[in-house]
Amino acid sequence: MSDTLIRPDFALPVRGAAYQRPAAEVVDSFETISSATACAKLHELGIRRSYIDGPEPLSTGQRVVGSALTLQFMPQREDMASGAGQEYAERHTALWHVLEAVQPGDVLVIQAYGSRFSGCIGDILARYFARKGGAGIVVDGRIRDAARIRELGIPVWSTGTTPHYASQSELVPWAYDVPVAVGGALCMPGDLVVADDDGPVVVPQAMAPRVVDSARDHEEWEVFSRLRLDGGARLSDYYPLTPDSREEYEAWRSAQSSVR
Figure 1 (tube, rainbow, N blue to C red):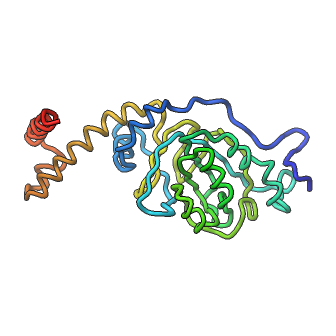
Figure 2: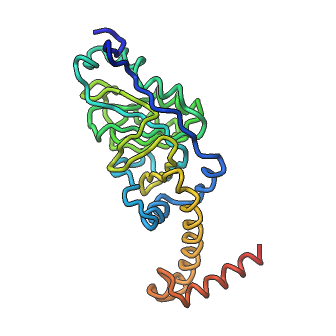
Figure 3: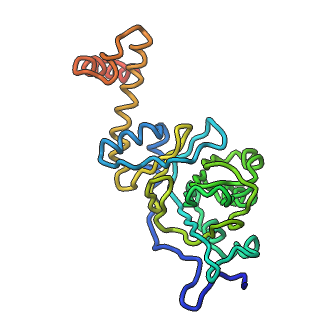
């Protein structure tokens, strides 16, 4: 087949509509917020499915927060894309196009249905992504060249590794800058992604300021609660805070602020 993925009435790759990335100060405001706290606060705000189930960190101890740049894989179909010769044809797919769209601070979020046989990102592509300022990669599927990607130091979350290249098996890179379904969560282009050892979480861009405000208070009182629990206090008195311990916390926080 031709190395271009095109049908007379339908051309690939598909690109979604233009979107606005979150402002740098919004992204920066999440720097101290864990994925667990972001997930909990979104749940309180009515967002039940923010956790991307499946992808795990390639290297523990890493963390990323950034704007979602999305890539969608779709099942191969022979009249559109057969997989034959696709290692070279991939340069005409959404996989190559999305890498040219990378802006500093982007987190590449890839829909791949948890496929065990499609290596969505490898060493060379990860290097190019990093060179363009990409912050991290979350794949609802597998990667290849794991050792080299670890050496790069770029944070990656995936469901595992495979020796296959991206379209060697049942999928093909289809579209970018489109909504994607990853690990049971919806991710829109420009949403915030917070990922650490607990996994990746999608924060709807419009809700980010509310999450930050709630999360900061939560993480501050957890510091206070840890201090009290480490000092021998009862769990039920300090986690979560009771009205009495909340009052004690507010006094403690005021004292900390005056010291600063």
